[in-house]
Image (cartoon, rainbow, N blue to C red; front, side):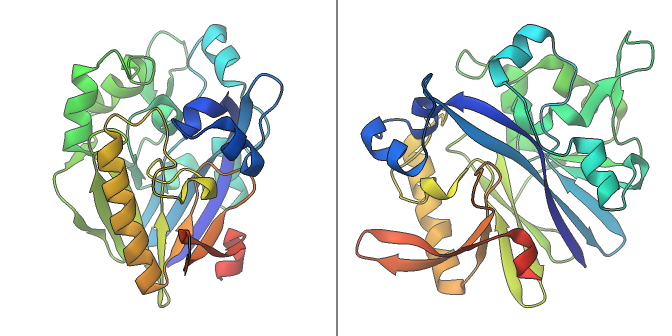
Length: 280
């Protein structure tokens, strides 16, 4: 097995939206904002090579949308999707499986690209099977006012039309040493990959725990559809991770890639923070 992590791009988002009901005077001490209340997040993608599969988890925003869309997300830095893969020895055609935690634009946009003539869309990874939870797929197709700006037709429909989509119905093993947890608080059907690597268990926390600063049980995003479910889901996985000495990998934290956990008087918090490469 081989496991890699890279940042496709950094972006800016409103800090208040990322921390919901937590007062700015508290969250800004830990995750500072600029004069416009914007904070920097990352779009980290995980690559797992196991048992003949090369699995890419999440694909960033892509580049299909118009200037107005990108003015709001302020993409900057990072390695790029194709460039980041290339640096790690992978070409797009090498990817056998694309695992999409969910269908919000910043997680799945890079999975589909313009065709050569820019008259339509095609899959970025032409040899891959695209894995999406059934709950998320059905929810995204319905769309809703809260997530309308996140569920973009051009990111979603071409996957179905390609015939290369696999809908995941339940938790469990998807590949050798690669299993799936399904959550419903952030958006119904959010999938969290759990990787077993040389005696270590690695949890890519995605939008369940987007940054290390979101470890406190009630420090959650205003983007979560059902915040009480998020609290329950976080509490369950954090207790399991604490007891099992799991490594958490953060998709969106600009400063912290990974941590282990410990119990403190304030609850479960980071014990040791470190870069992903230190796992190996």
